[in-house]
Image 1 (spheres, rainbow, N blue to C red):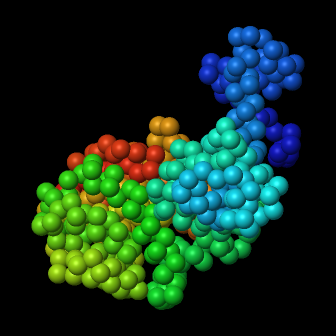
Image 2: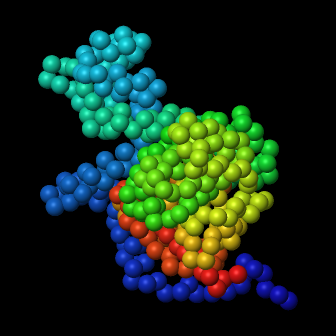
Image 3: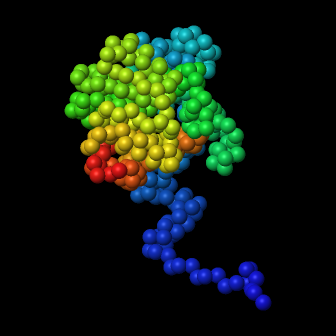
Length: 389
């Protein structure tokens, strides 16, 4: 008679490594309330204990901090203060808030280093607030986050796939492969404008890192309204430009090129890389913040399409945030991890992961080119293997 599963002998657990044993001991120690009290008072560990306490509280309060920033953007507080310092009473009238609540917001923004208070009680922009004024694309993204906050109201349901349709999934309709060919002008206007605003923030970093003037023709796939290509045009006056995106997006890009006086050297081509081969003729193709929007199956198809469209030894320029970036791991793995989950497709990949996908598609000579702000975007180049079919 077969033995019951409950009576069957369990296989002995494999011996734990010294690292696992050390981590188990460390976890038990730190979790002990008595140790926590001792560490908070002992001179050699007091600073570490207080720093960890602050870090843990910041994680708990992070949503409130983001909502303070959101309120400042919605009320246009940073733009108002860019004109010069103002007293709380004057700001209350400009913001249309009660004086006490105005002061509450000002103190909260000051605590987050967005504002600073002067000796006479007036409030002025601090460095972070001033940086927001100088980068309106950041404010556009902050305002856009209202949809993300809604989608993350129940993160467990989102992780389990029980939350139903998300706001971000509706905002970025191309994330749903079954609906990509149904997108019209009205479905792309909002996200195309946001992409154009946010892309300007990183275009200069990419172009400072990689000299596009060495190429004859650059095609930007998934290029939106052409913000990156317009910046490239300014850097390389002899460079021919092509943009490939969904037809209604390409129509908007064509208008932007005409407005910028680039109609004679910039072509906007409509199509879907899911269904159509990419146009040929460019000796360089760029993917700027495109790959991380898609799952592996789609990325493999996209990279094969790019490889097929390039001439022998043509160049792929791939720029996006990457997992494992030193000093920016929460950006890729926490922020983009959950943003893309709410959007419905994609993930940030590490450089080794991207390198493997590029090699599978037939690219060689994969290398990273240093950028000024790798926390926003890292840059990889690769070349078509002339022997790969």
